[in-house]
Image 1: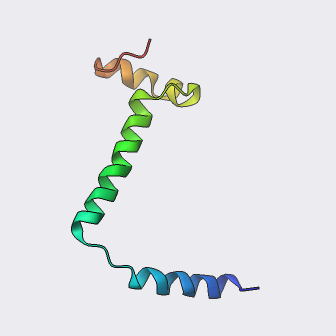
Image 2: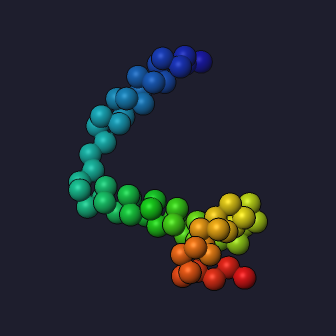
Length: 65
């Protein structure tokens, strides 16, 4: 069974060899931002909705009820 140190070394070796160009990094970043913004403004999950309820009303752009 590998230890945490061997797993960390393996992870570092893999991430060092992972090459991504600027377009891929930009796409991933924009996708993450899009998911977060969608979750904040448009989800109807009660816990998330209640947390961002005041923000939704203060922006006066996104109706929530």
